[in-house]
Amino acid sequence: MLVLSDGQVGTLTGAIRLPAGADTPQRLRLIHAALLAVIDKHQPRAVAVERPFVKENVRAAMALAYAQAAAFLAAAQCDIPVHEYAPREIKMAVAGDGHAEKTVVAAALAMELGLESAPELLDESDALAIAYSHHLLTQAPAESQPPTSQAAGSHVE
Image (cartoon, rainbow, N blue to C red; front, side, top):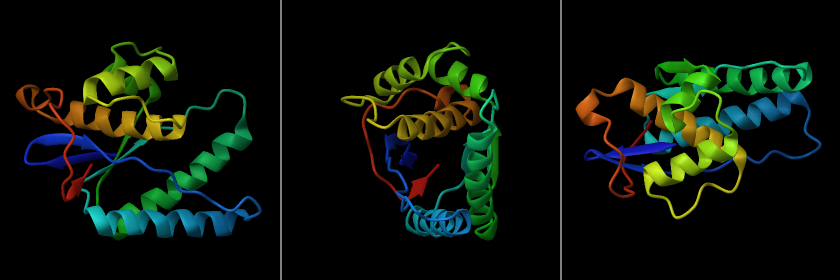
């Protein structure tokens, strides 16, 4: 996630860990509850998600769609707008190449955000890329300058 405070941009990343044996309804309840807790703690102004792209693995796409539905519901319950972005749009905004590999996007994020290294988990890197691309795509040109340092604040976007 992107944390915006006093014009500074920083990072806050994490992953929701789910029990291995949980069935789909249980997993969705846990995702929804965890997202509500994050929303309550950080008071985001917006939620950004990647529009699903299905190649061959329909089962994985369905699992992602379920998780996104939990995120949409949590955002809607808190009256927070949700913005969807295509994978190419995110890659173009962050790495300057709509066909960039995940590792290239992660490296671009680390450089743009002044991180010591890219997030270890690709899911965290993906989430950060979505948030950062939302920031870049919704700011006026003068406001979209790369961050100068990490900062924590009360707004997560």
